[in-house]
Length: 450
Image 1 (cartoon, rainbow, N blue to C red):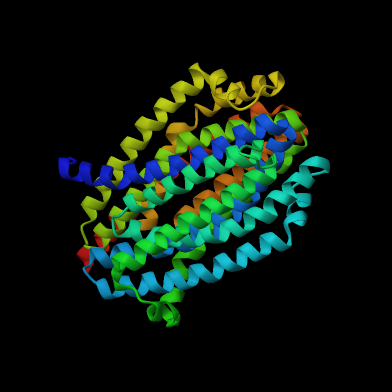
Image 2 (image 1 turned 60 degrees about the vertical axis):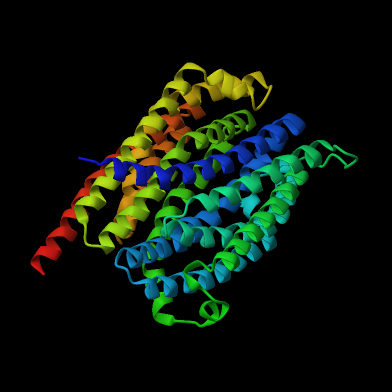
């Protein structure tokens, strides 16, 4: 039975993380709304496609890759009261994050047009998308590096400071969006280009805030010489956990990108409707992400302390809250989808298709919540391989084959694609739950045998 203390700890971790990600979603939503109002479906498609490419790279290698390895090791070290090890994993994680973030940023800047062409972009969508990626590739470096710094704070149990950083980013981004997209206060109207510039300036500002916090608070007593003092074994340990986590995210994100490429073949109306519906749904799964962060941190700390029953209870509490919040979003998607769609675009055809997509999206919300939280619990406990295997099966052996059948063989519309993703999440959520219970029981048995 969960105690008030455990519930409070989960909420203290999860709510700022939920708030942080909701703030990021707000800026993504506002970006899409402003760009859609300014330039219509071509601009929405260009910014949407460019953003998918940029954040796919960021998520695979940093947010759901290196950051997972750092979180698990730092949280478990803190749980075991080994603060020297926590400092070593944090400092080497920062070094690794800097190198990878710089490399990804350069790749995106150099090959922006090629990625968009591979994605199927042509004409005005290609032209606008290329401009967006070029500018945004600069900002994404600072965003990825900041993500690594935030990861260390979360592993310590500090989710409030990353939320404050997100608040600063969102305020600047929205203000500059209004000025640069529409051409206010004497600035020229730049449309999609203005959106990219606004995002980049905001991300640089957020990074400066988090770096300033590190220097002023002396987080884990990390010094510059600790970061540049290369420790091969620590790096290898982080990568051993990060690699399966990266592959898991790659399995999901690349399959999602391929799905988007398939949807591009259904026409601009279908793609714009799908992109807007996806943006709206992104708001709903942010609570799942926030409670997954809490589960990863607390499961890691409890496993480090050899308190496996508490690891299970904390993760169960996180899952219950995530399901409750995302289940509420399911009801809203069923009852008022038209209000969501009309906030983004005026095109009646796009609105009609998007409404149906959101209604189908209501099915997958609870399963998504379960999959995210118990997947987070598995990663916190040190097992990143099982989530990778589960995501690979759900993405590549369920989602993509069924989408191919729906789009190319049955020649059905984009709404049926959302039924496919509901099936995918039903499988993934159920399987993550079962394997998390199995992992905790295995760890408990190993300690008893010892």
